[in-house]
Length: 415
Ligand code: EPZ
Image 1 (cartoon, rainbow, N blue to C red):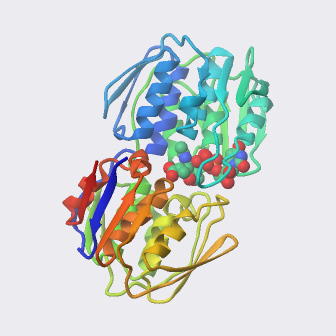
Image 2 (spheres, rainbow, N blue to C red):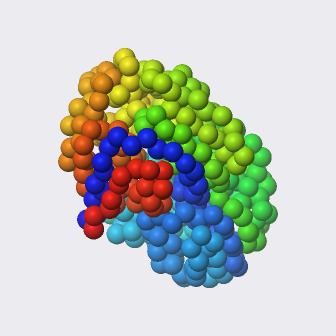
């Protein structure tokens, strides 16, 4: 297993190009199952999770080629099963459920296990599929769904679920009649998917709001589209500029996807200004401690909570970081404390008392965004930090050590 060795203390300066968004690419690649023929998608990031979903789609019988531009020929789908050994490595594999039931009327998808950040149930995906008329059973750890023809329905999500909204949107586009998704998630990745589905011939309105209306059509045609930039990667680099008192041009990002973070970082004293092609993030003279509460989009992203906690651990006062989306997303706290952070967890909040400096330590990554927060802490810690199990990082960040080295960080990957 690879590890990173980082010498802290270097301010980061220069340009970084944001890759395509992992959480947009995953549902868009799955959507190719809906249209017989070859779809082409651009700006696909080079990530472990992308390799996983490609394996999964090949396992269903489709042909896939390409890297940053991917061509998927879904003329023939020879299987309708997403096996446990693939799904257990990536929960987002559940995103083939909706398309398979819509296209084939049949799907057998392993229940995704939990992960470090929580139980991650998919009960809302299943209930909504049943609302569309599918018979769904849970047998031996698998979701077994079948439907001669899905029927449009008025659906209400108890919680705004990102992949739940995506899964059901992909099921409803080929259903008979009208489907309304109420209390749906509003993330930009959902808008990207809706745009792709519309270019396939789907009739969707309201994506990006909490009410999405879908008029079912009888069939879809392949599409050519691009993946939006990764707002979480962009946000991670903005926070790095604040932590290291550096100045980074975040190129290729979409500023309208980052408003909650930009406002919060300005409150900490950072200067963030538009530049051609993106945003310039400059560290302030000091780091003002602020409170953060994660919420579904457009609120502050839970996927940036670990990163901003690392930033607040070197703030000038007290910061209360409240996680409202997942029940166990504080795995990074104990690792940050080993680097000298002063954090106390109280229920769903972490009380972060800023310290003058962190110190290097041997640490271990536990989940994707927790490992990003350790990397950020290591960039400012005094001395050497080692982060083991960096495969967690490789799942969601493309060549992150190369991007940070290009900005002046002293970071090495040790095989
Ligand atoms: C997506 O996960 C993202 N993954 C996550 O990013 C992100 O953290 C999350 O949305 C929230 O923004 C992808 O898009 C591939 P949810 P998802 O369904 O869809 C509960 C990363 O780091 N819930 O919006 O699985 C759930 O437990 C990953 O890139 C149910 O109870 O998240 C959670 O508390 C981590 N039942 C809340 O809803 C369900 O059926 C929101 O989860 C579904 C969800």
